[in-house]
Image (tube, rainbow, N blue to C red; front, side):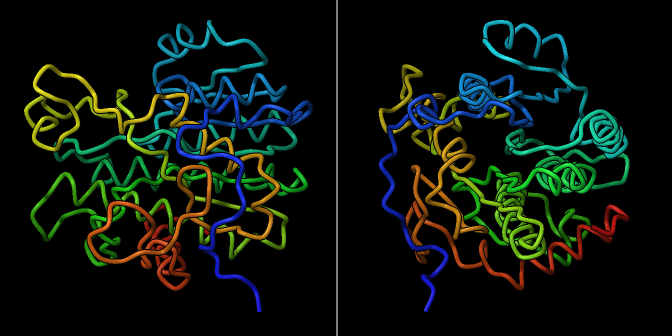
Length: 318
C-alpha cells in the first residue's frame, strides 16, 4: 500500500537550512527555471541559489528597473521578463513571448504574491489577492505548459502559506461580491488555492512527467508585509515594541530553502501534489495548531473543482 501523500521523508534539511545549503551539490547546468517575484525577498534568494547551481533563471517582474537593481548583485545567467500577475493580458503576453523564444522549461516557481491588502479589483472585477496569487499563476502555467511538457521531468512549485489555515476557497463567491470583504480571509483562500493548484497539476499532468508541490516558506519579514501597519504586526506578535522581529522568524535565505528543496530534491519523486514546510513534507493536522496542512488544501476533489472554476473564470481549457 503506498504511503499517504503527507508522510514526511528522511530529509537532511530543516527549518534553519538555507537555499544555498539545499542546492549545494546539485548541478542545474542546462536547466531553465522561471521564478515569479524572483527579485525580492525569498524570491531573490531562490533565484540566487538556482543560478549558483548553474540554472538559467527567468525572472518576470512588474517593475523591470527595480528587478534589474536587485538582480545586478546575483551571479549567473538571469533574464528579466515583463509580467503583472494581476493583469491577465500581461500574463498571457508574457507566456506567449517565452513560449515563442524557448523550447522547454524545467522549473516553474510561482513565488510572487500579495498579502492582506485593502479590497481592490482587477479589470475583470476579480478580487486582487485571488487574481494575483492564484489566477495569474494559473494562466501563466497554462501558457507555459508546452515548455514544461518538453522538459522531461519538470517541476512546478507553488508558494502557499500557513495562511491557508484561515479558510478553504469559497468557490461560490471567491471574489467577495456577496460577502463582506476580509483581507485575511481573502489571503487565506488564495493560499489554499495555491496548494490545491499543485494537487491538480500533480493529478492532471503526471503523464507528462510534471510534478508539482506547494510550499509554506515560514515566517519571513519581507515586502510582503507592506500593507500591514506596525500596530497590527505588533498585535500579532510579528514585531516587538521596538520594531524588532522575533527569533522564530526565518531569514530570506532560510525562507527560500523549502522552495529550492521542492525544486531539486530526489526524495520528492513520489510525492507530487504534497504540501511542504521546513524542507520536508508537512503532516496533515486539524484544530488550532500553527503548523502542518489542513485536509482541504490537499483534497483532490476540491483541487479539481478549483481547476474547473479557474478555467471558467479565465476562459482557458488546460
